Image: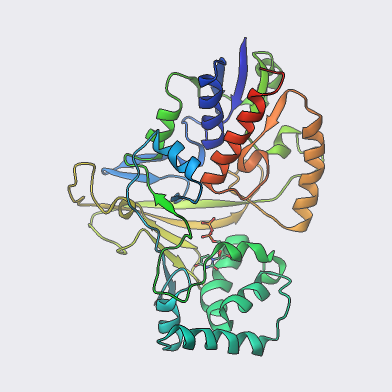
Amino acid sequence: MYNYLIVGAGLYGATVARELTDAGNSVLVIDKRSHIAGNVYTEKTEGINVHIYGAHIFHTNNKQVWDYVNRFSVFNRFTNSPVANYHGELYSLPFNMYTFNKMWGVVTPEEAAAKIEEQRKEAGITEPKNLEEQAISLVGTDIYEKLIKGYTQKQWGRPCTELPAFIIKRLPVRLTFDNNYFNALYQGIPVGGYTKMVENMLKGIEVQLNVDYLADKAKWDGVAEKVIYTGPIDAYFKYCLGNLEYRSVRFETEVLDKPNFQGNAAVNYTDAETPWTRIIEHKWFEFGKDENGNDLPKTVISREYSSEWKLGDEPYYPVNDEKNGNLYQEYKKLADKETNVVFGGRLGEYKYYDMDQVIAAALDKTQILLHSFFC
Ligand code: UDP
């Protein structure tokens, strides 16, 4: 009998497992996949750490979380600066003076601000009600049309008029020459890959892979006093209220016999016609070098295609619209009635969490558990 069964060996599960173990609990981690690390899993190909479930760039303003992850890995100095490709025209991201200069030929921040203001006035938006209106009021119509509209509709499979405004607020708009995609104090990629970092988090903790908790729930519930469940909340309840919607992603990964394909880790294809949303060239997360500082002769690229999730697909992004938000609240009521189960993480809480937020939530939840009567 364990004190805790943790379902899912991703960042939430690994953090909770580490903290509960260090506080003296016996813990078993299970995962239905054949590997640990959830969607941050990386695998080495041609000396390159390939982000198998899509690009993950660690960034945070939370010093506690930054110190925490640095216990398990050294981080490099990678700064995310994706390039947008609109029918072969290249623009800097996030939206900054380089973008505005290329788009309109403006040179000073005043000129850029005036141009945005002019386009915002023309559109006549006072209170943005959806992503389209929010985007236009942030950066104007030209940028919306070339760099946001097509990409967003591909990523979410819905028109921008039907998406919540907050999604686009993730992207900074700057009147400076700064291509750093994130407004974060701390940023980097774990040296040696995320898998190694999660391996370090789980050091000394029992992990069983290829184990499907929901397929044999009664048996697994019997092995521990309490369960931490990080899978999809609707799957836990056998979709009894209907299924929550997710966006899924499909990757086409290729090894190319050349050292440099696109010269950057991420290129976003922002037009509506190109079927993929972006291409990741994994070696540039680590400056094109192996761990000894040698240049790598080949390269690995992944084209990313966004798709609607259906049963059996990997869920990636919760769809945060009203309908799904309301359905989640109904599932949450059921979850609150499960006295011995904690639901956590992007899927367990149906939340568009970044990695640092997942870790922060896991640390908070562990504190609550450690101070409750269960321990
Ligand atoms: N976005 C966009 N054009 C881009 C990149 C992002 O319009 O080239 C928008 C899009 O709506 C996306 C949102 O910004 O859903 C957030 O992007 P982010 O890169 O933060 O998404 P993630 O990294 O989670 O895929």
